[in-house]
Image 1: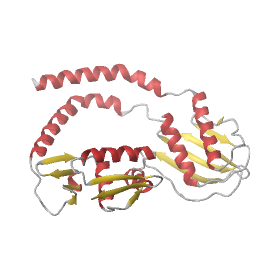
Image 2: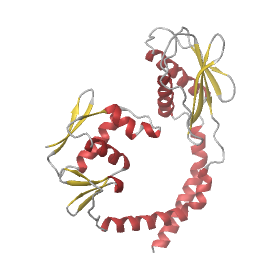
Image 3: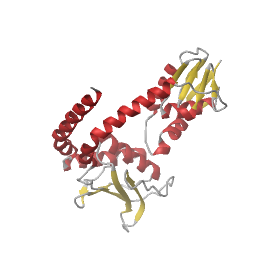
Image 4: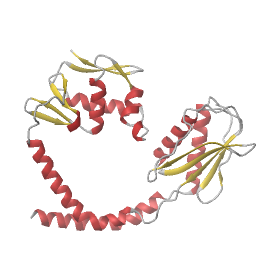
Length: 285
């Protein structure tokens, strides 16, 4: 019966993917005007970060099929990291591209002053981070890396039945592992009434076992290493997300701490105190 369900589910998923591929591909193709609006907004945000509230972003020019140029009315200065963060956040917010090359050039000599590449497949290249660029006239050229038209979605279709079977087997093994007790050893951290096993992503209290996600495990490790001390939001964001190349906002930290609170709710002595403007203090009374 289970094999029949897996086979039927495979057929339904394959049919749904085939019918939706054309729609998904079409949806991802943004009109040129939309791209220009997003890039003008990027230029505007860069000026604001530089403290320029009055000068204009000049019309965006399309240099070729995949490359655009952003120009500015006046000279300005900024930190290279600001450009990297603004481009990543703007592109992620608008789902514009996952691969691109940003080239900052001087207006006068047209030499590259700063450049970086974000490519989810080949890897990111972000040299010269942390530099403060001198006041000057700059243009930004952004090349949107062309996606391979033959993507893994089509290849995925042939592997769906096998994937579903693998998922079924993995689920059975996971449930079996959850039923098996964790042997007590020195490889745990005592957190209140809980034993915290970072390597296993688990919390244990008597006969109760609580599974943690990877991010919850990283966060609890940081808090357990800094009991009764304030753990800065910036440190949490850097250690949990940014080291993996993920740009997040402060709200992500609040959501993660809220999840940890719920999983540690059985111990009333454990508290996460929000220190306004700084971060969280992990207290065990």
